[in-house]
Length: 389
Image 1 (cartoon, helix red, strand yellow):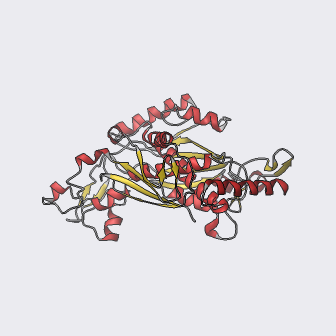
Image 2 (image 1 turned 135 degrees about the vertical axis):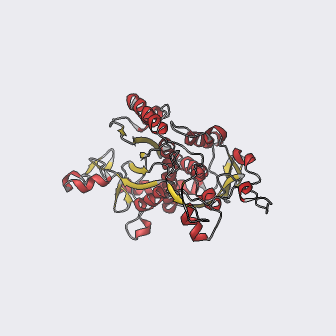
Image 3 (image 1 turned 120 degrees about the horizontal axis):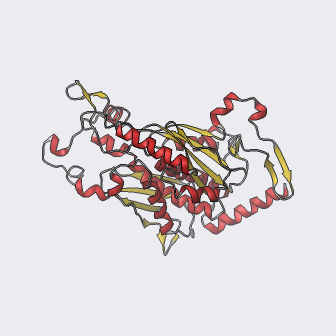
């Protein structure tokens, strides 16, 4: 069975919901670890007031019994604490009142889905678009990815991330192990390993916020312990790097993705791009470098996966841009919805979890089974095959 999920819910609705199908039975879930990942997404310098309201906790309401998956679909709920202030506005039943009382939105904000969604779905209240297109939906996607992380950790696969850049401030390179990187960045307000860079980024965000503006950046995810051969070269839609790229681009406000050295590869000769193949009794086949970020031919090659994404500045600004009122067709300066000056540190956490999901999906496609024990047997057999090659 293919691993898949769907989400539902609005940013000011009662809850966000996800249904996960395809998880094997007998996978032990750590609920404390699951909610720890949700808390990580809410941290980060530059976040707005919403993070003071929401204390995200995931509740599993199906597919798990006594701490273990049953093989049935897993239902995950993340409640919106802010719902209490929006009961009338977001009521599923018809309500009486003026547009103002219903908080109808008829002035689309540049950079958001407001106008495109209104035109596509023929909606004259753009709240019906912005409520679903909001980045709030990433809370439940992180919950889904956190379950994928726990599945992968069962097989020794570890995932971490970091912020590489916020606006004009770039983090310097380092030689930290993944364990060290995870430990240090968890203590950083902007998820960087360098303390001096952290201070520069905080000051930069403060300046941007004071100017009524917002700022984006670049985030990176690293995955270690991935076996050779996830994904495939035989069809375009089975190439795992392509699927990861699509998943990264689906994160709100992400406008670019690269793997390994990425776009830099277009500036270098081939001798400085490709990774030479080596062999030792201890490691088997491996690469002398990892410029290609753990992928060749759409398949993992046993090296760590390195995935980066670029997040644009959040388009909700406190110095609003010009737009057009859909009722009057007259220009106006776009109305402000509550927002963050910078959500790049949080985006780093979201990136980890969408990558975790795609790796887990590819892992189960190759080593699938109805129970975790069956997956383990299949995986061990494959590792023996690789060792004998």
